Each structure stands twice: as C-alpha cells, then as structure tokens.
Amino acid sequence: MGIMKKLLKKILNLLPLSNLILFESRPDFSDNTKAVFDEMVRRGYNKKYRFVWLLSNETVDCSCIADIGNVSAIKRNNKSKLDKLKYLYVLLRAKLIIGCNDFVPKQLAKQKYIHLAHGCALKKTEYYRLPDYIDCVVTISDYMKKYDAINYNCPESKFIVTGYPRCDDLFVQTDIKALFTHPFDKIIIWLPTFRQSIRNGGCQHSSISFPIIDDVEKAERLNCYCRDNNTLIIVKIHPNQDMSLINTLELSNLLFVKDDFFLEKGITLYQFMGNCDALISDYSSVYYDYLLCDKPIGLCWEDFEDYNSRVGFTVNPQFILAGGEKLYHYDDLTQFISEVAENIDNLAAKRNVIKKTVYQDTDNCSTKRVVNIIDSLLKK
Image (cartoon, rainbow, N blue to C red; front, top):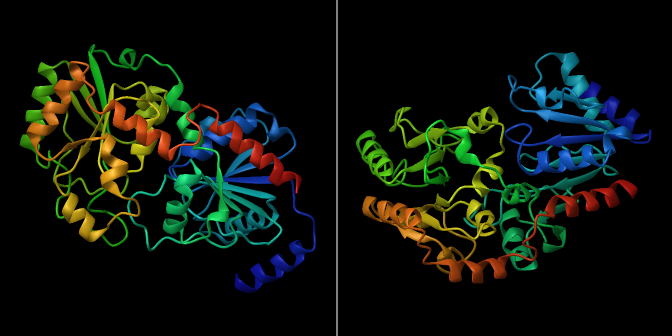
C-alpha cells in the first residue's frame, strides 16, 4: 500500500485538484462542520462541488444527506484495499477540507484546509498541536486568539475571528417542553466535561468520576428534588466519560442522554441548549457558548484544585469563569436549581462583562462569516 500511495500521490499531484470538498466532524454530521455544510448547501455550493463526508462511525445513519444532490460519505477506517484506495483518492483530489475535531491528513500543499475548532481555550491541552498544513482556524475574538494559539501550539496568525457556526443554533426559538409528554416549568441542560476517560488509555483528570451526584443514591435524591420543583435536568454525557459508577437510570426528572437523544427529538444539541432555562457545566468550553444565551450557569467546582493540579488552565479561571455559580456540594446544586425555578439570576452582570471581553460578535451570523471565508479560499 505504501508504494501504491506514493505512486498515486505523484500522479495526482501533476493534475489540477478536483471540485471536491471534504467534511469531518465527531460525531459524524454534527457540530460546527454540519452548520457550515448546511449553509453551503443552502447557497448551492454542492451544484458546483462534490461534497464528501469522512465518517468515523461505521454504523452512523446517513439519511440526513440522502436527499441532497452531489453529496456522499466514505468511511475513514477502511479495511479492504479497494476502500483504502478510494479514501486516499478523495484525500488527494479534494480542493478543500473542512473539519472541527480530528485532523484529516492533508496530502498536497495546494489543497486548502479550514479547521472550525471544537471550543475555545479554557483548560490546558499541551499534547495538542495544530498541523502546519492547516491554513486557518476559527475563534471568537482577538482576545481569545492568544489563548487558542497556546492551546494549539501555533501562531496567532493562523486564527480568523468568525465565531462558532454551531452557536447560531442557540438563537433558534423552539418549544422544547413540547418534546416531552410530561410538562415541566424549567429545563436545565447539564454538560460535564470528562474526568475519567474510557479512551486514551483511561486517563484520569480528576479523582472523582462524576461531579456531585457520583452514585445512584444521590442521583435518585436529585431526581426527587427536581420533581418537587417541576424541573427537568438533561445530562448530556461526554463521549469520553467513564460512567460505570452511575448505571443507566430511568428517572423522571433527571435523564442521562447521549447524542442520539437529540437526533431522535429532531433537534440539534445547540438548539435544545439555547431553549433551556439554564446550564450546568464545569471546566468545559461550552461555558463560552452559553454566554450568548444570557441565562444562569452553574459550574460544578468540587474537584477544582484536583483538576487544576492534574490538567490546569490556559486562561485565568477565576476571571473567565466568574460568570458561573460555583457548585461545590449537593446543597449548592439544589440551591442553584431553586434559583432557576424562581427566576433568580445573581451573576447576569458578571456574565455580561465576560461576554463582552471574550466575544467580538454576539449575533447569529457566525456560519455566514465562515462560509464567506471558505468562498475566498476556494477562489485562491
């Protein structure tokens, strides 16, 4: 395969690039890349360019692209030699690569590559490095450039300020309460970062597995509290998180869900999140995204010192994360839920200060700005 690859690369390097654009995201058909893909389809780019999604999940449902002309998908983890050659062929022929999570191996210098990122700098990622072959990376402001550059181990000049395309969905008004058979006064989305991974050799970023409700008894207690306050909490589990200490529970007001939950509801995660009444998170960059919603944020803080000593932060967490209520214990969590139920928002002013600091644009036009950049890349 090595000799075949070199030969194919030499031959195709002599030819003009094809009108082919590759898309990557994890999960497949999601995140910033999917928002950009949808906008490019709306503008009719797929009439001139062939669109190919590079898939990581062998069993992913491709129905979302079935009725779109000139769009196909190919598995990245191909096993047969023929499939490997097909994958290599699209890598070598693509004029542009658009991704937001993994780094697709760019083959030729004349190809263009825009990385849409997976979130702004917060915690340290010293192991992360942006490949030199990537032309540009999106971020949310000049203020965040320097921190993103540190996390990506690359120069600030690589970054373009557009905002994240997925965040446009935060502005889409949807009655999410109608998605459930039981009526709730309030719905809170809980997006914890992973602490003890099921991937990467089982790395541990904290001595605890899950914040505050780390066993069945606490989860059941919280469910009762939410039921009494007519509040629903949706816990979106991080794909890397080891959840072995909390079994898959069937509770009325505390639901542990994965990505397919939102697919089944016919809504994106960010559309759902934007219509929730509050966010619970911790050391996740989703905090930046939710600042755009101007709604209460609770941050699970019980293992902050432990997490800081093991992972650390690129930014000053005491300033950047000052817009979130710190939740150290179970009682702090229930107090936050009560305040959301009573429409109490103690940190609105602080969140606004931080939002103005870290954001250049706070509108719903990030996707359009990115596609305008892509248009200029395609013309070069």
